[in-house]
Image (tube, rainbow, N blue to C red; front, side, top):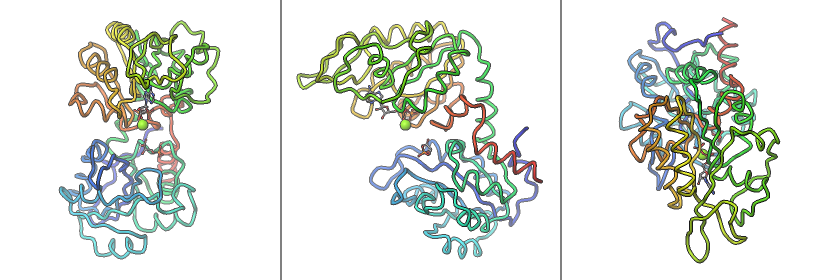
Amino acid sequence: MSLPLLKNTGDLKGKRVLLRLDLDVPVLKGAVQNAFRIESARETLTFLREGGARTLIIGHIGRDQKETLRPVFEYLKQSLPVAFAETLEDARKKMAGLSAGEFLLLQNLRSFPGETKNDVAFTKELASLADIFVNEAFAVSHREHASIVGVPALLQSFAGFVFAKEVEYLSKVFTPAHPALLILGGAKFETKIPLIERFLNIADDIYICGALANDIYRARGYETGVSLVSDCKISQALLESPKMHIPSDVIIRADSGNEEKGADNVGKTEKIVDAGSDALADLRALVEKAAFVLWNGPLGLYEEGFDQGTIALAQALVECDAETVIGGGDSIAVVSKLGLLERFSFVSTGGGAMLEFLAKQTLPGIEALRNSASRK
Ligand code: ADP
Ligand code: 3PG
Ligand code: MG
């Protein structure tokens, strides 16, 4: 069933809209460091503003209840008529005074315990603040939280412009052009295993790198020293698949300095921090022969300066002829710093959400919108 779309809401003038955004952006010393996620909602914000809606923006930041959306408010204020509400009570008062085309931003949703618990009373309170609901937070739509699945059960609900684009574009990835290459790096193996299992049938090659590769080295009996590993169980099907590739050499960090060496030659006190040059050459060759590439997750510990592998991959992808899709907060942060984002065929705002959508073909937040439409 297709999604109910924001452009089909009808007259918005004076209507109270509850708008769920993904405001989970990196912040340093009180300032937003990368606004990609906020800016991706710009079309929806402009549509609501020009349509004369009275919009309550809701979103979370981080996973700590104490984190604040104030820096996001300061950022939004530069381009929108927007006020800030710390509490639901405050929001109720300020919504009553809001004029057509104006916005109000509520403090971090996750500072309210009812959000992540999808608590009924909290959901009702949120829903009572608006006439309709718009989800423009694809990146959080794998979470069964009040603002994602609770509210659409109570209010007539719509998908924002980017939400709809994400679903439309990523649905095409289930039947990619061939040869299709999946590159998975970063950490959090548990969130990536379902996708890998599914793409073992769909993709022609799967390149596993970043900290994920450490788990494969370990499963093969290699020493991984003090590298980041998870306790995920890797299936025999993946370990034995001829489609699966991992870096043959790595950069290690040790007390004596950094060094490039074979992945099967890591010492007990060493830490794998990036892919080596042979590995990058192999990866480049795979990219060059691909017609479709999906990439998520950095190749190395880029925050600590080990970003050479990730940068080399980004370069290879923007220079190749394949259709290129990228997703994931950390991956996007690196590529956006290089100014290369717009040279990808598609950039997903989702990290975990993109991976779960590709593995399951739907998300709780998508089903909630569809169910809302079918109740109309
Ligand atoms: P994304 O946000 O793009 O989806 P992830 O969150 O899965 O990516 O993973 C990003 C994290 O993985 C980064 O913090 C990065 O430092 C880390 N990482 C990548 N390679 C390594 C490595 N070899 N050792 C430790 N951490 C790594
Ligand atoms: C993200 O950063 O991918 C989204 O904001 C979801 O955040 P979460 O993984 O903390 O639910
Ligand atoms: Mg990440």
